[in-house]
Length: 193
Picture 1 (cartoon, rainbow, N blue to C red):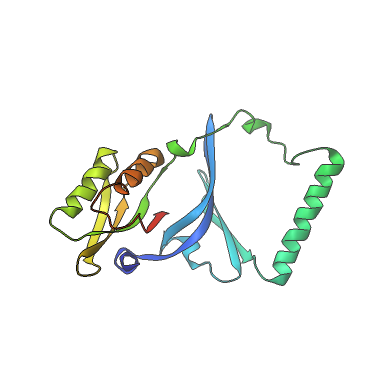
Picture 2: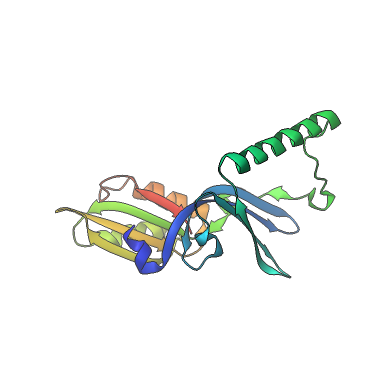
């Protein structure tokens, strides 16, 4: 991850994200994400888990505590069993009643916007970087930063970070890149930022 130190990226973590675009839609996803060293979740390590909640009125609030290990895991599993049992007894599929959100629709993944980190290996020859950037540009994906370094005698490793873009456009660009002759292998790593 040679980009990490130069761009202030600390680590990548599995994150769960829920975003509401009131009044009509929301999206929920779980994915690995690279976190900047200043992001509050970047300091969560080991047996600890955290939930970061961002509200219009309060800004960022974080709930942090043990989430792994025999006792915390046992407690969470027991809590889930109790919840499932209550749902079975009451005939419900979930005990939380949220009529205000009843009309929300899930936003298709293709319409979600994110920034992305991509690492790929390409043939090392003049204009290879421009060919890679042209493919991303053809899909309306703008590149925020890029580093190209020699990987071996005839190969270069290219790491790029995109500006925020539609996931559908980004995925199209990656699929197209993987079918071009200048790439030595499929994109090695794709991560959200």
